Length: 313
Image (cartoon, rainbow, N blue to C red; front, top):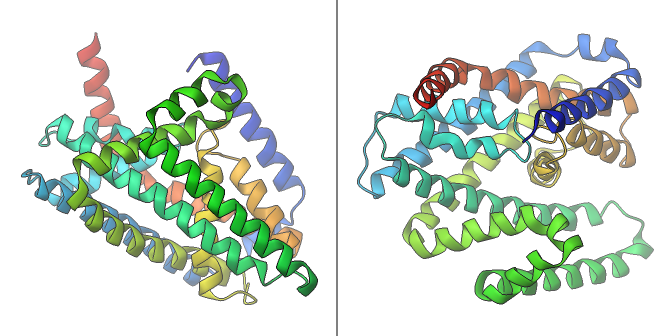
């Protein structure tokens, strides 16, 4: 990525965040319930421990047994790197942060984990849409169910074509508009296709632990809501909604969708009845908590990053 594009990306994020802060009551942010916020941080770390355990177990299945602390520190460094890269692609740098794992095996395991995470996010988003339908006026339900069902059938057919018809992938890449809009999704699905071929047995374990980590992340959002005295939504709401909203973090216009995810989340919460200032504050906290928590990966990121740059000289 060019310096110009990075600068524009950061500028866009900054402008969006300033606009959000301008339209909120900062006193709400200063009056959060600290105990609930600490619980949300705890569950965020639980999620990362589960993801690290998944990497450790997956590596064990391919006859690699690195120290568990190294896997956790490398995972957190990758999480931090993903926070500052468009489309969160920085997480794929995980093999660079490990010293006792062969790079090709680490990459294969990461592809398997990332692929199942992508499928879980998409599946969770579909469940969230069905859940949210019930918040609509009754007369809209039949039309919404019909539209959503048609959309799911279309998406399923599209997924099958991409997974099993190589000609379809080439066709999409040749059409200018589709290649611009669809290339990121295609890349994720191509990764999933490769993982299916090479890590079939590992995908079951990866999917199970991915779902468990999804529950932990849902609890993280639930306790952020509790810190703001948002009691109108149950855990099920936050459990289902976060995979749908966090898909915006993969929009490659800004680092990890910074500003875009917060805007989408704040608008969504306002549409379903939450006060604007509270909605924006929740959206901001949902970014701050993970990013600050990921900072424990900074020493590994700096250490390994320095080694990598030194080796390139």
